[in-house]
Image (tube, rainbow, N blue to C red):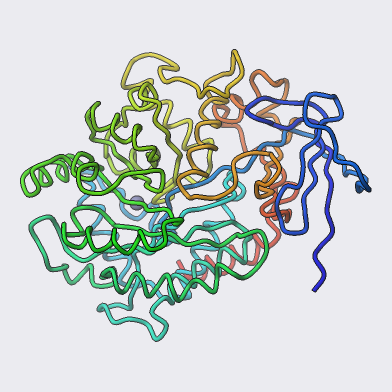
Length: 469
Ligand SMILES: [Zn+2]
């Protein structure tokens, strides 16, 4: 089979190392990765010698695609079905979710996932981390192919063209002091051996296709769903494939912190830091209820915090202590979790608004070191999320640079949301202007999957979604 030829694009504006440059040429190799980034204006590395294809000119603002580091794809079908008055809570939402799960077929999971992936691509995400705990049939019996539902979600990702890091999750107890799962949790049951089997059987998916668009990782649902002994066994196994990311829900609710203190004698993040070797493989999802010391321990370990601001707001979790994490030089990325929001700007805007409401001040966090002088809050938040998201999923993405996967968004500078903005404020306008979607074109692994604001299969995928929800 012959490799597709190198393709070359000349972007009117491109975000290179955190700063907008004009007239930038990006060459994309047949493997879906960026071969080189050159800059005719003389502000970057020179073109490599040799025959270069004539670049296609692309107007607008080109930036690396963002990583959505935390998704439960099936929950896209649940949005709007659990919004009740009267002292509602995360725990009551969870009951509604269990009820919803009891009717989901593999076909429905695939249809819902494909619709979600289209929405994420159009929302600026070119990769998604699927934290997958819906493993079995109703009643808890495995499918003939035990990884059936994981394969369905990966199939949806392939159909839509989004990059995916699929992370099956260990889930084997109902709570800190409840070693048996509840009947409503039977579809989630998974021990370490089962998890290892899932990952092994899905490895064939990793090797198919170009651009490394499918990868695998490990998940532990939470400390409440996994005993101390099971965490230890999981770690021993994870260390046998140390290149894979490890994700866990942690300290999302105050009740979880209280029960962890009662049963394990430490707060959840402290317990993790004491009992597992936290390092850059780890992504701690939510970490809402953490002390300054716990945030410092996460930062010093090189782990990433996975923030899902819209879901955390929707579930009434609380507001993350973002300034403190950044003071400690910690890292974060964003995820859409239950998918009450499906775009990168929605998540980043709500993250910032949560901080403004909590502190009664604006722009209280700090930009990353690569942000240019004078960069606005939206610009800085995007740079944080690009770097943290790619790190959390262990993928070569988040930068327009040689060797990175060619994941590129092009924002339409003529869209009313961005009109009149230049390099100093265009990303702030994207994050804060709620005036429609200026994402015009999206490339993932070298393929344009969204052009002129439309995904290549969106009508057919929406039709299938409607017939399953
Ligand atoms: Zn989650």
